[in-house]
Length: 131
Image (cartoon, rainbow, N blue to C red; front, side, top):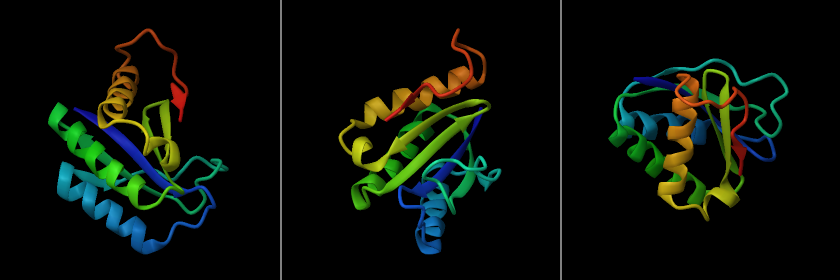
């Protein structure tokens, strides 16, 4: 099991509470276990007033379902950003760019972050890629 911290924000820093609540609800309905995540990194660029939740990923199917939720939000609003963090490893998906990615590509980025967060890759902690 891996625990992902998902931070939803907007490029302009204006994330409305309704979108944040809807995101949490949709992730919980699709993936299951959701808890309160830690606060966003202080001064995180573009993620002012972000909503952070913790998601327990129990299977590959859960990753696939999570990617479906992320893609649907990116399709609705290009200004949305989601940062996926596992331990010290982070990946930031920006809506406009992530819309052009396939679900498979996003899934592989999340799986790479999960593996790195558990120390299963030779990669150093940090940012494996910004999209």
